[in-house]
Length: 471
Ligand SMILES: [Zn+2]
Image (cartoon, rainbow, N blue to C red):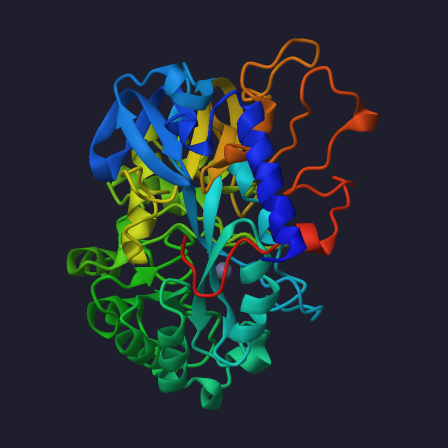
């Protein structure tokens, strides 16, 4: 064993002693316990006030009551919703290349900037990369993000880099796309076609070919509206049950029947066949005069997603919870919108361990507050619908550890004795806890923390998503 390894062992032994326990085996049964929150977990049919216990990054128990003494850290979630970590099924986060005017570049956002603060623990990048540049996307974003980043591969090999690339029929290779997707099961979870302006069916049919090869769904942004390829035909024949139609409330491609102001025949046949419908709000894909009549006719979304990118992030669309608020304003219930951000998107991308709180699954959890008041919600045309409810994220847990805490609900007052052992805090939080009474200047180094917390050294800042891992 290396000197460093021995040192590390010594430090963990000391931590166990200082915890007042004879050995590490005497640690409490759970690391983190979220108590008295209203648990919404549609997949496991939970809609009640319950306690959720977490151990070693996994859900360990969900029950009506779990004793505080069984956990290192207990958190009172009275009055709040406790839900599976939210899944945003449509984002653009390939921000690392420096390419101008490209979703494989400057038009994308960095994932961790926008996720945990809205309860999102998993995002699905919707086609920013294709089979040619996916390895680069994986190396520079997926493997380095604290957020779980999954990907739908663009059917265009070069990815989402502007019309010249995205209209290039010669670079739409279903076989190469399917083969790349097959190499990364659980990371590449779909195939995307987007922004195509031509009259051909090739992008959609090649995407389905890739989807068949890798056993994954296809998500369609239907590009320019072309008389040669009507929406009805796409949804009635070209797509398979389980494929995903995004931008469902844009109204740009015949989603609403303009004569009846009802869902078009295309949307009805699609839903009947089992095509999933995704919001994909974005900067230009959510209109009140489409969403309101579709919702009035009962055409609810299967999944709520943002289509987050640099031109949508500060416009009518604010973030994942803001899109959920819009659906609340249109009459959906809190359990419905939570299901559309958890169990439903997980089902669409066939990731059974995500979007629910079953024992043994990754402990990704959101704690949300429903605020009541006067709020305004803005669409792509800068028009507003007023609403009386708004969801706010109080706490986000990723892989069993606190990664976001809006009002410090997991913390102790600075001038009071701690309520849990600071030496054990690394079991339940990613944040530094200073032992009570210890001076700044004599704080002992910890094995998992850099000395300079604002500027951690590379050695202390490991990537959290190991290759091929779907934690
Ligand atoms: Zn998009």
